[in-house]
Amino acid sequence: MREPLATAFRCVFCNHETSVSVKVDKKAGVGNLNCKSCGQAFQTGINCTLLPRTNTSIDTDVMQDLTQPVDVYSDWIDACDAVAADQATVATPRAPPSRPRQPNTSARAGLAPGEKYTAEDDGFIDDDDADAEAEYADE
Image 1 (cartoon, rainbow, N blue to C red):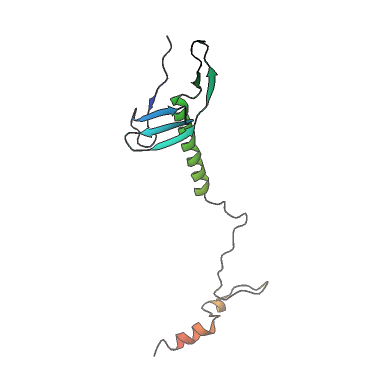
Image 2 (cartoon, rainbow, N blue to C red):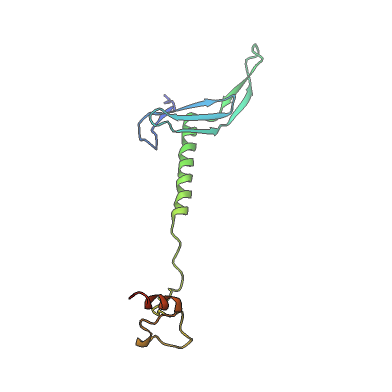
C-alpha cells in the first residue's frame, strides 16, 4: 500500500517537529508554508495543469496538482540554503595581498631611494608644527 506524502514538517528555524504546515492554493497558483511555533512564512509558485474530465456527464474541467506540500517545503529549504550561501560569500574576508607590505619603521615622511634608516633618524620629527608645539609644552 502506498503511504501518503507528509503535510506537516520540522521548522528549520525553531526545530519544532510537525509545526510547519503547507497549503497549496490551486486557483492562485501558490503554495503557502507557515510555522505555528515561530511564525516563519514562505510562499512559492506551484505547478498545476487543467485536465478535461473523462466523465462525459460532467462538462467541467479539473485542476490537477503537480506540486505537493513536500515540494513547497523543499523549495523553502532550497531558498534558506541560497540565502545562507549568499551571506557566507559576503562575510568571507578578502584574500591577503600577494606581496606583504613592508612596515614603515621610519618616523620621517619617507626615505629617499637607497637610503637606510639610521639611529640619527630615531626621534626625528618631520612636521615642523608638531615640533613647535613641543617647545611650549614645558611652559
